[in-house]
Length: 444
Image (cartoon, rainbow, N blue to C red):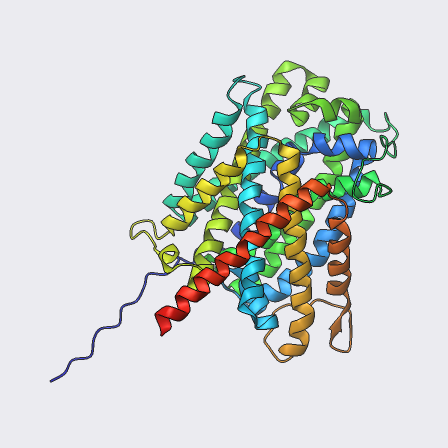
């Protein structure tokens, strides 16, 4: 008698992340490099009005966070942007290109944060800038491999440490409040059109500080009740981070002024030193190391899961789906994320690397806002655990505003950043067609 073949079930990812851990996950990635490493770079552009740049960035992020909240409730799966684009426009090539841009932005973001880590590390060990940045990525890739639950615990501890550092900065600044003109800005920085405000240009740079909430969509397969947990965690983590950013930016310029802040490789430690001396400098430098390391870990997790998810969607090779039997993590995706992130560290310039990452992020955010609009018409009856408010008929107003703002922010970047990013994006097209041709031959 013929016996049916037993069904082989591929081991899946382990659901273990709750709302608290997901929110901490989001806060942890948001509170990393932007506030600890890029605050000095941004102060050199926006001056003492830096706090206005953080407000502008938070408003921009909020529009897109609402869109991600709606989409993640509709599609609680890995490879978030790929799934959103395919459902909205039914074109694999468009979905792949946006996902490719997301991968690019992810690995460049890891490099930028690792460079921020190295800036603080060299305050203790001069001359080890590049080894510190590369070594950090290698060590945290191992942590990523060990498992998502262990990584979440690591993230929770580090997030509490880095948040404590921000509260210290806020407390240090209280006696200095009112010591500077909070609307003082340096001469206008150059952009493509020249006339754009330094506040907007700084917002384009420090928007990097808000990257993170969208990566929550890439851990849905490891989250308990993701349709409700992920949207809530996105909005909560963004709100918590925004309040802290505004308070810290006001405090920092009150203590040292934008000129000194912009000249320091360890700006947050400089603020502490100005108030309490060398011991405080050391304390904040150590906290900054925790913060930037934490952010590197979270982005490494998100990018590797995006690779895994795109492979599941059959738009990247199937070997990226391979999961280690012991740790139940996608080990090949983790290794590739590590290698490509290290490659961008070699650029060394944190401002240039952050600009590159932000170009990709704004393109992705524009696309995500467009997806919400398209799906209101393509799938009006689909289950939505969260809906972006304010509509005219079916048409959602806030995603339209978010999309327009994202396009406007792209005009704030230096032309060389836009050119390099455009080349990197274009590389994705021939890769897609090669992979697609192989897939068609396999099917034949």
